[in-house]
Length: 437
Image 1 (tube, rainbow, N blue to C red):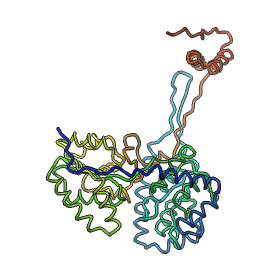
Image 2: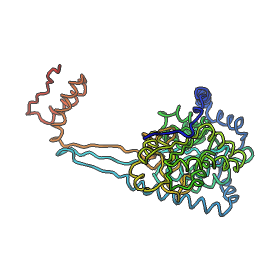
Image 3: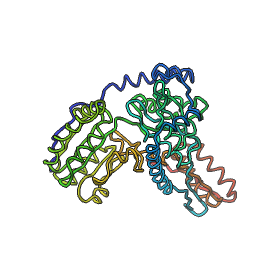
């Protein structure tokens, strides 16, 4: 068995993260001190926006009137699919209780968080789908207050289709504000918002770094890097489909890795020949992104067996993993590390990115080894409770007192001792702890 790289990444991801961190830290310090005034200043200098920050009902109505009916129907279609999947997820999250020992009952409750901030990227592309994914999922989870923000365009504000999607999906307040200042406004509770308990949604490296720095002060969905995608393909795969799927994901950005893992050398060569042709047919900006991503970050990996291909996939833990190979049930059962899995040529990552249902806010940079993507679970807290009878408190207090004294935590031990004395005044307990070598 052997793993052979027919194409290997020639450059590591950008090394300027320290510069980004310093820049974002400085901005957050200004925003923490200057509040709404500082946020408005950044809006003006960075995005050329001097209009309203809180989007008014009148502006929402104007935006809706500008969105073509066919696009509104598509947005509703995507919203409905994402809502149905989120509702199915929520149905798996239940309260429970159990009698652990006679007289000791413990349980868990599922409680939606109080306030969420949803960040929707702007800039190069209008990320309508990110508005649907984040706001809809928070609404299904039962979040008390949902705020959304996105970068305004000079003289326009947030693009009308994004505004329509945010409003349709249930955002309580929408801010014409993006970047670090948008993240800070959500986290600090500017412009009349409650402070967010969690920040969710994708963004550029500055947004991602702001969320990273603020983590702890607020919750976040995950630490995000450049989007990445892997295709597993065998001799049954269609080279044109595989190449198209790789190029479609490479257009996200110049540093977005795409990987092909295959057991068929002829397929690998066909895909490698086809990709540059497809990139050349893209519009200029999209093509530039895809060309650099393919040149610097793409890999084509040849394996001998399905098990070897699965091992490579688990090691990379891709954000998106698309299997175009025989015996899809085997792959579903075998693969373990991915953000979202796409099985068969009849689906594609683009479906998941836009409209099929499962969330597209997913772990990147190998984080799928230990976490999944955005879901109703991220917007809910699983909290525990317990209740005991006096009879059950006896053995609990004995064990607690002895363990606490063994640990050197005398205050803990005495909080158990006092209950034994109160609940069992006629009994004598041996709470001494023998020395342990």
